[in-house]
Amino acid sequence: MTALLEAKGLHAAYGETRVLHGIGFSVREGGVTALLGANGAGKTTTLRAICGTVRTQGEIALGGRRIDGLQTEDIVRLGVAQVPEGRGTFMELTVEENMKLGAYTRPARRVTEDFEHMFDYFPRLKERFRQQAGTLSGGEQQMLAIARALLLRPKLLLLDEPSFGLAPLIVQEIFRILRRIREDAGVSILLVEQNATLALDFADDAFVLETGRIVLSGPSGDIIKDEGVRRSYLGY
Image 1: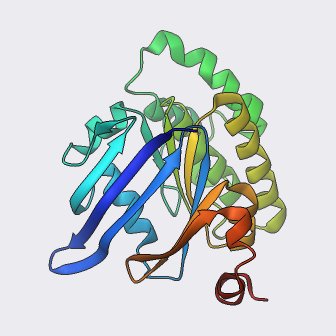
Image 2: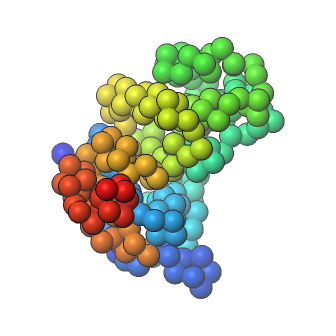
């Protein structure tokens, strides 16, 4: 399987504070890659580097095309969508208005059909279509954030801690839907997830960051067997 996303020698910094130190990784076309690591390891910064929202050095290619150095809006138009930690929901807007924002780069005539696809995945959004997003539950807001990102019709979906703050049953439901989305749309996913067991079960490949450096990478089935990973991230 060919790589959709490839990063080589990737550095990232906030001002004088260096966070990523020359990392390299890839996300397979149609595959899921999990990014694991402790708080402060550089996971969210990695996603921001891909989107061009943090200062970087090195190479990032999407489908063989260099995207490092491009403006964030141009990277989005090339097919990269992010669901940020905390969901990034526009609380004062309705569910409908939030979803329309996700599709703002696309012709309006094609968006209506995609709304129906989102309602198939997330029936609760149809029930709350006219409702203000700030009145939704945490799980419903996460569903809205994922739907909004998918309405871009992305090639690559970046998910930052999608289970954060949610009840276990809601997390199971969201990951069940993500599996459907992957199968139906063939979208590639780069997943940052605090629940390492859940992430490794969902992903094909994984890599582990420590203080901005990759210390382990490979098929998720191999990584879940690694004793160090089990002790540090899985708790057994």
